[in-house]
Length: 298
Length: 242
Ligand SMILES: Nc1ncnc2c1ncn2[C@@H]1O[C@H](COP(=O)(O)OP(=O)(O)OP(=O)(O)O)[C@@H](O)[C@H]1O
Ligand SMILES: [Mg+2]
Image (cartoon, rainbow over all chains, first blue to last red; front, side, top):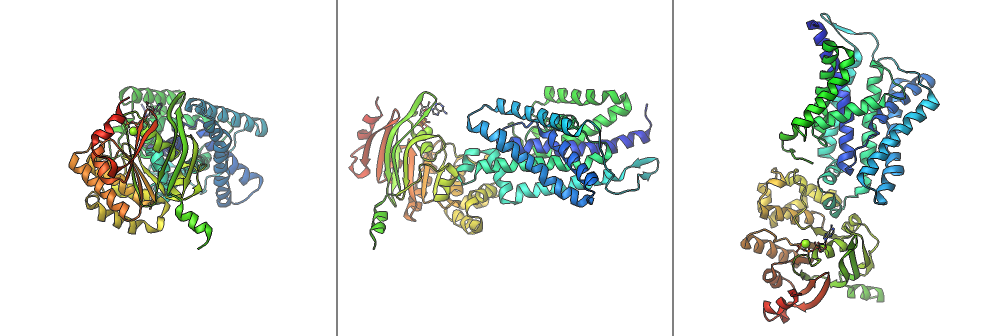
């Protein structure tokens, strides 16, 4: 059995990676709410976030803050491109949501392969945002990057909340998700809102990728696990609820981390998928479906 | 006065020419023409499944349809729903179409999407018409009573400052007294200069309000009547038979 220190340590790590899952999960929700599409290319944005930031840092040698400021809009642009080049044309031609979802999966595989062919399969990483560390609390060591993830994650969640509840565009996006026709009748350009959703979602994925890369590595294929775990987080949270996805991500991250120390590294995904199956069996609308004013099955 | 100006004055608020719509192979609306003059309340009556909702949905482009639509003489046939709203054509949907999980306040604020600078003033005006909404501001729209929901739906549409307000069975599911209240509010709005195209099944109420009636059956307009020419509701009944 692991001791108390290992336990604490893994919970701390689980929270940070769970926050990343949560951000990816929110990305799923934003697009789903605006369009009804589950964007299986969500993980690609995480991968691109890490890769682009790494490329800017190492090959151009520009300062971190500048690299971050450049990476986010670049990756957001890839989200816009996906909407314009794949999703919008298919919708206009009356493709079923099923077909569009499949197309996002194809896009994910394509981007992954192109990255592999052009950049190779070498794992890449960059330094933590603050050097030194880890911070020692008794026998528990916490890497400084974890604080960055927690801090930025919390700020981002706050910013998203303000965006969705206080701004004209944020409210309009929520209106589209609750009643698309009514939104149109009130003058909201639903197509433009969908574009906004893809850009926002991609930006979220990029930030997740930028934050998490120093704690591990990035490579052409890291998108899939982040995408899958973010997807699970969103389902646990009751697909479509941003707050639920965040909570789902944290739960999933901690459970995975505990599974690793208790059962061994091989059980990480077993744990994640067991949780998913359990949730789907017991709470088909997500664990958090029954709570709060927004409780409603989609 | 230039010739163009006189022409504009003669133009009705809304003129639809041969507007039709189909769902797959079903032609739910045959080519239909209708007019709403400035300052007019026009009612569309007809039995269930006649195509009343389809008509309003085709006019607001929620369903793709053929035919031409002119707003104050200007051809707006090619405009999508949200751009029609910008011109002042707003519809209250059948079933109210509220954002059920949002508060009354948020529903109204989103209604003011096109008028972000005037949200507070418009909201005040809405509360004057429907004081009850002010008391329910922080309640979710889905938790309101049927009558309150309809008030909110109309109030929300007013936030967009419509010039032509279309309403699809606003009295549906309401007690007669509440339905009467809602419809008399429409009269008040009309006196303030908003043109109204009202779909109803409660003929007596609607006829009291409207200047003209179109009767629609099996996807086509079968009669156009002035309400003061209708001697009794039995006159109308024969159009319902098919
Ligand atoms: N989405 C749809 N797909 C296929 N057929 C439809 C659809 N909506 C309506 N219809 C059909 O079109 C016809 C007209 O429907 P519509 O809803 O316009 O009638 P209505 O006059 O509004 O009826 P009600 O008084 O019941 O609201 C009906 O036969 C209906 O079955
Ligand atoms: Mg109808």
